[in-house]
Image (tube, rainbow, N blue to C red; front, side, top):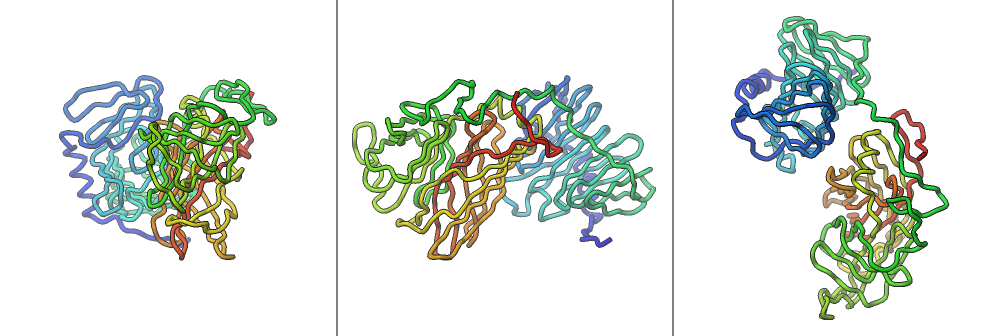
Length: 459
């Protein structure tokens, strides 16, 4: 079997040993946040203070997490997820991530006992020696992966995707997709195993999602809503304009006129009023999209705020999916797929129509709180497309993805709307050879499936 190969050097093991022996004396920036917790798990800080772990609690360097009879799922700031099994003790020895991969990032951890399942994030993706999990029997290094560790007197586990390297005093073993490993003791070379270690997260209570009949439009409470959004509404909002990157604005005030056109919105603390023509308008009672262009943006006193001239402000707004409903989708590890329902005409960031929207799609993995967004635009008869991985906010139903500023890079921000995230909205910019193309898109959910791929039908 061909191995991609990476080396866990002695210096890397030494660094981990030092980090394990001398945990950071004081926490700096949080390393992770508790996504959910059951039972009575705790965290003991470097100073010895023990605190209970509940949803939303932050943990950082030096914290020893003890799940006791419960379970804990953590989301790290680099996008990694970790599920800790009952009777586990796990310490964050040294975690650093400043929002970019610049060589300073690291993730050194210790599994004292128990089991974990993790989907790794950005730390360790480019610098393999920057990520290690240690036990008294073996150390685990990664190459961008999803894997499990079960640790008692011996260590065993399975790689779901990617590759790990298991090392101890007896040698090293590379383990890749679908393979399992076993480590008998600290001086016995790790070996391959045919026994899969599948540490699935605890199954939540039977899922009862709010009712939604496909032929109807309903809000988060299940009440019927009008065919179009009209009047004042509290919405999630996403927009893009000129040189500004796409931005999400959660739970903001908006006003739609009697035709369903957006006339007023709070752009994160700045209320803008629009009294000009509304282009590319769409509105289905749950989500709405449009494009503003021209010199018609005003403040509350009627004074001009922004002279768009030939530039466009693309926007999409929708009735928010509640945090509780999103939590249901997350706990059940559901996956939503979305198709394009409508969108605005793509324009250049500097002004002027760029072409047409050829297609767009969205896939939301609510289990690991990630989204994959794709956009294709036709510019001058050539179709350009981009696809980017993004992350769902743990504090709400918004998401962002950043692909960069080179040709083909896609950047987006958006949100989920309606019961069971039945709609999604996204503002985007796509870099093409001629410059930066911008627009907004609305999506409708075409499927909602569980980890086995079976369709989930609300009851």
